Amino acid sequence: METLGVVAGTGWASGLNLYLVTLLLGIAQRVGWGDVPEVLGRTDVMVVAGILFVLEFAVDKVPYADNVWDSIHTVVRPLGAAALGAVLVGDADSIGTALGALVAGALALDAHAAKATTRLAVNTSPEPVSNLSLSLAEDITVAGLVALAIANPVIALVVVVALVAAATTLVVWLWRGLRRGVRRVRQRLAERRARTDR
Image (tube, rainbow, N blue to C red; front, top):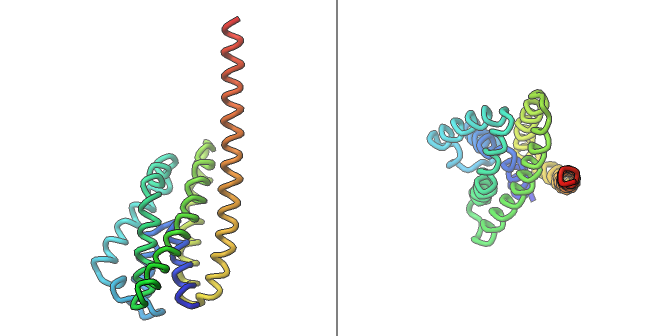
């Protein structure tokens, strides 16, 4: 149950920021906080994760650049989370490792879908404050969820279940709103065309 909590917490958080999760797990391994596999505390892994986190931290604060970054990471985040899940499960049998990878990857995809959809909606706002605030809130959520997954995996599992429900509801709600908006725009364009054809 504890391993599942760690995999779920870090998996969902990876959907928001894979590189921060990897870096935080490396730091936890280095300071001896929790049972984190040694490979995540390797210097090369931490340096690459750190560089990519800084890059994502900067890009994530820029409207529309974050959308491009998110579209690229639609594949990267779930696959990276799956790899982390497999590493975190560790010496379990191959079914356990595969299950850890599957759970982490699926949860990362859920979080990523919520992030990318929310960012599309927020970027329609002309002011930059909402985008910046949302990005910082995501980073804080990632740090908090990773810390909770390491400190209390069972509670982290409960939190992830609630986050999955909230994220899925948010994505469905935003997509419905987007479809309604697109229909309205098409209707207005059709009305304009009809007026100009007269």
